[in-house]
Image (tube, rainbow, N blue to C red; front, side, top):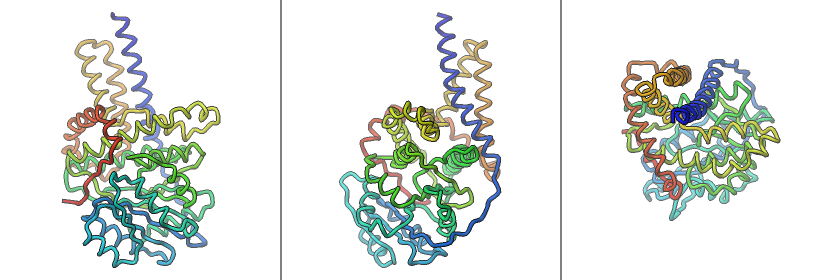
Length: 389
């Protein structure tokens, strides 16, 4: 029995240690900031700003107004709102603006369906770049200029911009904002600093239009269309660039109920994507498609919150019942904390951080319960209501 326990302990330990060391390596890599080399584009690309808006009456006008207030030639970009189940009064206000409004009414709504409807509606030969903006996002006036300069490099096909918190009005929102910045540090800045592709995040991401059109029209995902999209593109060796100083404001979760629903959708998309593409692993290794392999590893890994919670629980349990086995668990728990601490931007190191951390145990329980509801989540679109309270 003791031998079985030792084998089980080491199997778990190695699996957790690999995940934690992975996070630590990229977290450390995010500390290095390459000096920016400003390059001005020689021409203005034509942008299609695609905004899928499902019941987003509260926030959509601010988003559209920010998109229209760009320091960019107005004839070089179109704001396209795909209105799904929004109020007639909201649609009338949108119709009065210089945008393209596409009204849809899906029985089972998804972002994938809305974006595909927009691509079918637009003339695909009229645009150079497709920019995906969430209905709650706000961009500054220089946003398109900065993206255009990035796409002025002929090698750039996909760009992910830096998504930051629009609101910090609750402790849950503060914790959610920190979580987003940890992702930005590890999965975006840390990755590109080591020559790997940045992770996509669902909004504030731009693509060469033909590339996006081809990848999206074959996308059938219910939730997390960006997960499937990035797996497809990475398998075809498309590199994702990251602009750490080009910001898009994104509304953060304010209540635990919304956190539970949103993370259930994210977890479902993660494991759905893993199931869809895991059979490509051997060919990818053979063909040295390391970005694809790296992303597949991310999909197979525990989320940071689950990893943090389980590592702490195992450390405590072994300390109580098998103290000799506990030291190495506390060791990797310390390394995990180090990786997360390094990845948190300095501006979040305030007394308020302590209050936000108090939500971590409860958030872990919500994530744990989500593990048993993933199949249900992949059958229907789970909408997160927006609007800062």
